[in-house]
Image 1: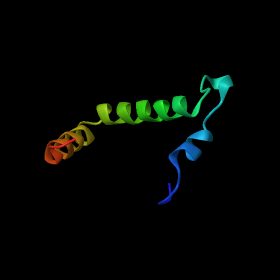
Image 2: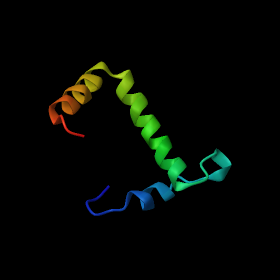
Image 3: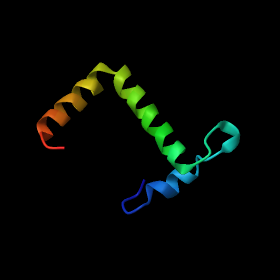
Image 4: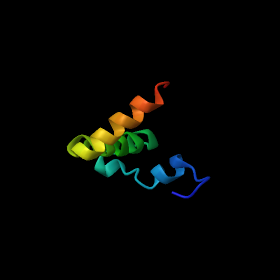
Length: 59
């Protein structure tokens, strides 16, 4: 995505009720699920995320 773009507009491209993605929220949730699975499957990435969040301290 380009700076200043709207994630909701991007997610609209993936809305397809025939495939079980009826809303923008469902498309975004699906994308987050895919990212979570990719992170959990890769030990190096998991370690980076763990260190990144630890270093941020305040969420």
